[in-house]
Length: 317
Ligand SMILES: Nc1nc2c(c(=O)[nH]1)N[C@H]1C(S)=C(S)[C@@H](COP(=O)(O)O)O[C@H]1N2
Ligand SMILES: [Mo]
Image (cartoon, rainbow, N blue to C red):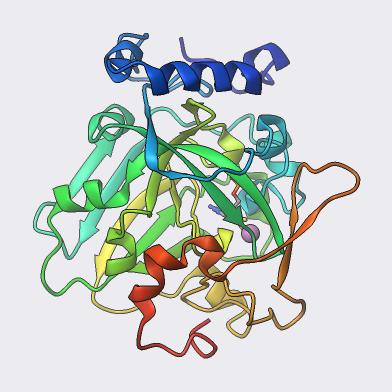
């Protein structure tokens, strides 16, 4: 049943991590795990926030680090459409409607698509991938996302030979997003990737976290996750994906071009103009927050450094 988001999520609805861990062990052990999970009440037209999703744990992308607690992941957010404070997105997103939802794929493609959430969820098998999310503000989290490679979706649309970039546009509803009253960014929030970055298997189209559909504050119902780049590239609540032949201007490039470049690859050697990027504060480590050294490409250099082989990463930040 679709739950009206005007009511706050009760603590009892939030899966305790131990439950998630036990469920995950079960999924890892059972060979018919996906079939079993798929027999759980499947997504109807509506995609309620916090609904269990059928997934198989990724064998390839799973950090050994302990995931950040679900309560930290869902209460410490950047989602400026709902305000600039870390607690604003959880507090002020109750009116936002994630159903019905459509995601449009257009531009330089042979097959433009308009998909509803049911179609998005069924387009490819859902995987759980445990990624690090590194914000440009020098904090990080470890998040068990649910989703599949964005490439699966892009392939369905059949990119044309002339396509070189992918532009991501996100929801902008002034009625339900109080942050739009602020001019801190110009709305809608826009991000972009080069086509080869967008097609890289690490680039995730995420529909859930901790085994359940995304809470609004984390980008419901469907968002982008690009784990080797600063978090701002990972656009939330996607409504449109457009393939182009020219480099799109992202919202952050527009507002502060000297601070936020197109690439935004995590790079501990290139400080932000106002602070260092050499270390990061690990969210959830309590009052005595631990700091850890930031890794090139957020630890994914082996997977993605080849994409930038002949580029000066100091200039192309
Ligand atoms: N539409 C939209 N997407 C967004 C943002 C935003 O303000 N609006 N903030 C970005 C930033 S700066 C970060 S760090 C991540 C945070 O994702 P999380 O709240 O799920 O941890 O979302 C990114 N995606
Ligand atoms: Mo961020």
